[in-house]
Image (cartoon, rainbow, N blue to C red; front, side, top):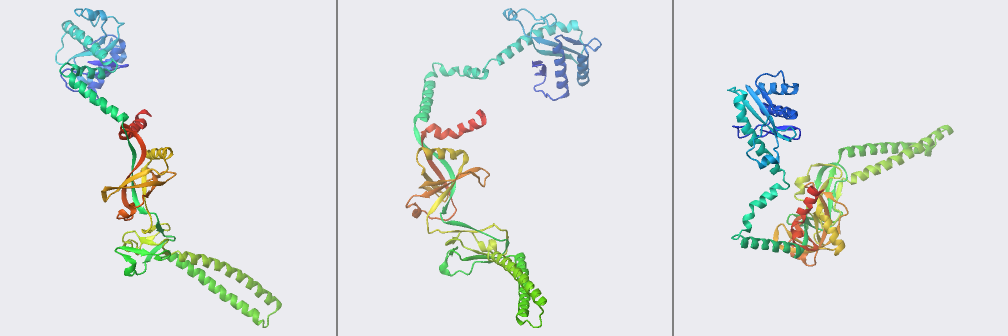
Length: 466
């Protein structure tokens, strides 16, 4: 049996087969044949002869016979019965004499493979099958086309809920759901935005390599008083490491060598002018010109030498602040390692001063934080816990929010937020730089349902409604 969908017919069922493979050659050829026959509106009785058939049907039947090896094939367009036929169930539908004005809704295909019964024998049987098939298919299509049919089916199956025995339970459940919905809409709750971050000293600096080179020396020897466990204390301006740049050393030696040679040449010219023995006016003038040229050359070489010397000084990396080195095992990490200009060598933090929390707020939540800062106050309250101490909550206030977002390590857009710790909190925490923090920013009061499901609603707005 084939059902008409638009201008084409699709094979929906084959007797004796539980499932259909729509991409198979036989099913595809049968669908094409049904489409061609339905387009004409006339029944097809094929018993081996194709001379009297239209060309498009002849090609379709030949292709199908090659695939199926059927001896005879009958294709009858199924037309929607009249309402008068529905009022008179005993009236039979004749596929050959049915009025052509009725809508074609599909086709029924009868084929004979092993036997070859004549049309006079098989026709009465086809009439009976045609009648039931046309009525059943028309009713199925009408039933399927009803608006929101799956909803009405679900409601129809749920009518047992309002029967006398189930009605009290139904009312109780409905009342409970109503109370829950009212609670979600009316009960106010703290609206908080969650974010991850790090606890670090306010005074914290990264140390960069200003020149490319190989690390050849790391830190001077520390006395026991200057060490605190594995932490190394350094003072501002103290040498941290020394780099070696072979190209820079060669450049320095070339410039210095040229400078020395030029200086010696200048000294000789000056000495000749001072002695002034046997010099003609022409020779004296030539020596004075040479002296001027050499002095300008020396002046240029001195500037080059100063620039190279400045680059050499930058090979010695010093501490920008007082503090401790927070980077782990720097000697093993950096010794004899080649680095490029701008590479981070280590971090130094002054742990004796104030600490702060730096949050990475997801961009889709940062807008609510900005709105709350405008509506309530800039210094919103923040509660946070430490990864190593999840049972204790600490508090602080927002002191700054970044003007732009940036890409985090997980490739998501985040907005940086700085949080100052409340007085006394810093003394309670056993602090270490870069401690992992989970925080919640208080953004005012909102209905409980919005606090719980606002991200689901925003997902629908972004992916469904937009």
